[in-house]
Image 1: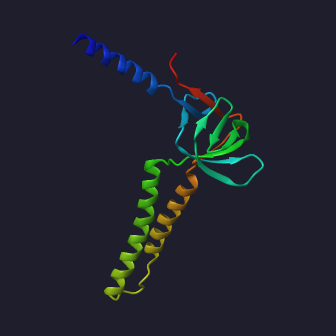
Image 2 (image 1 turned 180 degrees about the horizontal axis):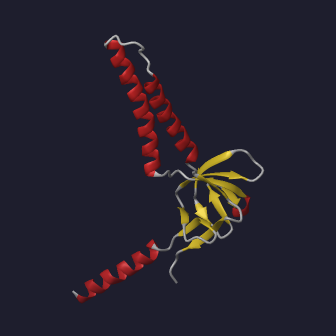
Image 3 (image 1 turned 90 degrees about the vertical axis):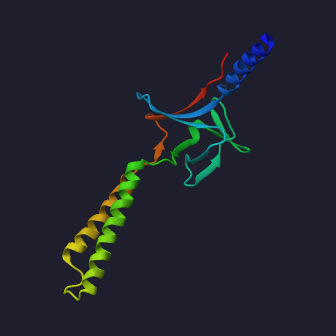
Length: 164
């Protein structure tokens, strides 16, 4: 029984060392504790210096000065921009609600006035609500920034979490 307990403890120590033995590509803002980590196997969108093509590929390996995508190796200093797939949850919901709400109010108001044979069918209030909803959705779409330029403010680094 004692040897079984020892084997279980050795297994968990070994498994935890393997679990923490990971390497990350880190995009960090200088002077801020905020970091965005990309591990091997994650999808990433990036743009290389002096090229307008936006690449999207899966990270296969991270080295101390470069990142590998399949059989292609890209140096950190050659990456110009990185796009994130993440978006602020509340901003996206507010954008959807304002767009749907403005359109729904205009549609229901116009349909109700058409059924009741009121004149004018399209009111100034309906147009204001529709314009406000679509306008707010457009502003929130422009306000979302899901890309970062790699420069002196945001830098790419190599993070190795291996133990020992």
